[in-house]
Image (cartoon, rainbow, N blue to C red; front, side, top):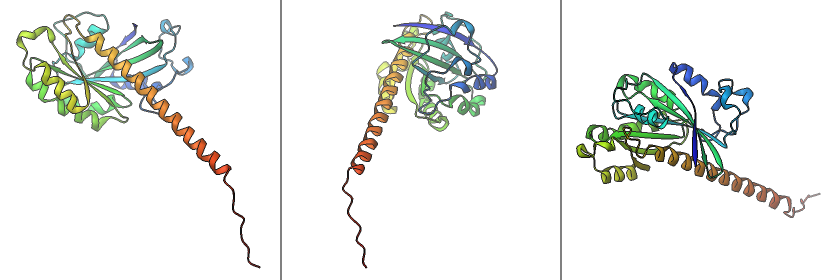
Length: 253
């Protein structure tokens, strides 16, 4: 498996949403291959890359200061900066991963954790198929707010969303306030996959993104199989009706 970061885009939030319209999907926010002519914002340097089998939008949410931006920057190969300004609105990066012979392009959205931006979250959740909820393992308050973020995702999402719970700042093990088992148990309660990461040294971050991509591929395959079975059932039903012996009508003279 290898991954290629396509680009990093930081723009006004409304422009970001507009740039994502060509990815709008009909089923679970996952779109098929999109022709270049309807993707005017694709960078020329990436147009020659093999088109993805799946494109998906994911959002990263959580309390301000838990390390959402640092996780994304670390994954994007930009290293760690101890002084990261709070996210204003939202920004995103795009990443192309090669998994099991399939190309998966993820658009990873970094959202603001401050309360004053909460009203904007539904816009960023639109068509997102996965949400990564981040808390700080040294801050129990951020852990207690997980339910709030789950509710925000459920309220703002427009399609079914897969949840991933991530405990960040694993490098501060000596200051841990939330035990690994607590996080794992809570993740099970909310139906989320569980991971722990460190944006400082990069531990676990790539694993999270790969897990999201693999899950979405499985989900896509499952939906395709379900649709195929449904079409087969309809076809068989029609075939059955076509071969039914029609009873003659009785007329009274």
